[in-house]
Length: 269
Image (cartoon, rainbow, N blue to C red; front, side, top):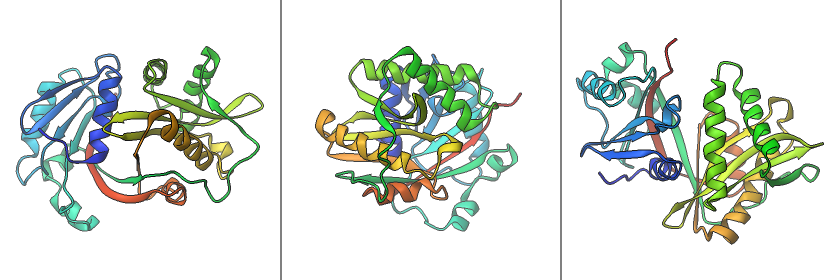
């Protein structure tokens, strides 16, 4: 299966760098992260085409067969540019079986640019640097908890931080933080996804430190690193089109390129 979605193409590339296993079943890929089974989008199926009417139960059964111990469901769709652009059209095309099973539709925007520019209001007060020490990476996990709340499994966040750290130590990219008084307030990663693409990962800002230009400043700083150290020709970032962060990315020079679709159901207790 040849992945045409730039968002999923770079997603899969980074999951492989983190240690994920990928199996090609012809009309779908199985992406499995044995080291972090609670990572929904590290353990998912990527469908080659939009699931047609009446196929929902078949895809749910395939997910269950590939991930028999999973408590979540995650299905990505490798769409093409000809897919309908209306949200109402998307909703009408969602298999009824997915709705009945409690799956929610995920619609993201894939943004790209050749050169990352500075945000309109860069933050000149925070210390922008890479995460290096054990203390830095513990702060990364702690920031994730502040951003997502106590409902996010702590062991999942610790495994996620460990995977990020391994990639940086292997020279495949870097994880940057914005610090004030030694406290990590915002973070993101940028990694080499192959073929000249550099993919941003997990832009997170402390809820109490937002609207200070931290995210845009980090995006810009990481972009310079990507050009100089990774030799990136195209930068890729995936965002919720309804999130205010997407405006930050556009202000730094990113433009909407594709849409990315998926279906998920959180882990059941």
